[in-house]
Amino acid sequence: MKPCSSRRPGEAVGACRGKLLSPERRRRAVVVLEDRFRVSQRRACRLAGQNRNTQRRPVPLADIEEQKLKRRIRELARRHVRWGRRLVYRRLRLDGWSVNHKRVQRIWHEEGLQRPLPRRRKRSRPAGGDRELLRSEYPHHVWAIDFQFDQMMDGRALKFLNVVDEFSRVCLAIHIGRRCRAFEVIDTIEELLKLYPAPTHLRMDNGPEFIAHALQEWCTGSGSGTAYIPPGSPWENPFAETFNSRLRDEFLNIELFSSLPEAKLLAEQHRIEYNVYRPHSALQGRTPLEVLQQWKAA
Image (cartoon, rainbow, N blue to C red; front, side, top):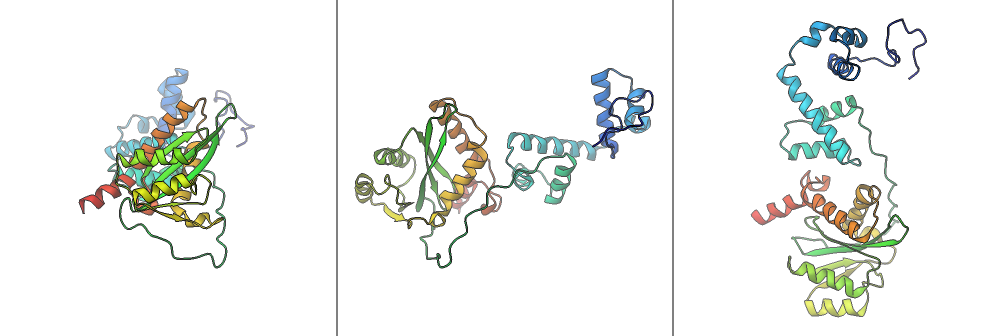
C-alpha cells in the first residue's frame, strides 16, 4: 500500500494507508487511538472516519458473541501457527462452538490470518505398487514404528522413535536419543506394554534396528508378529509416515532444542496435545483419544 501524497493538514501520518471499511474496525481503531495517543473521542472519530453516534451506540449481543469467536480464532491461530482454518474450525466444534465452516472462513479472512505455507508434495506411488496390506481392525492390533531425525541448536543429531496405534491414530511413544539401537527399541516397547496390551503385529521398515536378531527373538517370545514393508516403499507404512510429516511440520520445524532433556519434555507435551487436543480429518474431526473412548464404549 502506498502512502498518500495529498495528506491534508491535521491528519495523522499514514491516515491514507488503506480504508477501515466496517464500523466495527473503525470502532476498534478509535479505541486504539484514544488509548495510545491520549486523544479525545471526538478527535479519534474524525481521524478514523467514524460517526460519534455509531461509536457510542451499545454493542449488540450478537456482536459481542462475534468478538468472542474472533478472539478465540486468533488465539488458536497464534498458538498453533501451522494450523489452517479447517483445523481451527474442527477444534471450535469440539469446544462446543455452534459455527459452520463458512463463518470461520469469513472471520479468518477478515482478521487477515495467514494461511500456512504449503508442504512439500508427497512422492508419487509407482505404477503397480499396490498390494493388499494388513489393516488394523481394533485398538492395539497393529503398531506402526518408524524413525525420524532432527538436530539441536549446537548441531548434534537427535533420533526420534515414533510408535503409533494404527486403529485410533494414538501416538503411544516418542523416544528421543542420540542414537537408538535394537535393545532400546525393545525397551521402549516393553515400557508401553506396562500400559497397553501387546500388539498383534508391528509394522516397520527393514532398518538395521528392526531386523536385528534381538528384536526378532523378542517378537517370537512375546507372540507379536512383524509386518515388514518392502525396501523403498514408505507408502506401505502410511500411518507412521503421516504422523512423521505432522510432527515435522507442527513441531520439529518450529521448536529449537538446547538440550536432550528439553527435547524430551517438549516432545511429550506435543504427544499429549496430538492425542487429546488436535482434531484429525481422517477421524471425522475427532481426536485419537475420542476414537479410542468411543470404541471402548461401543
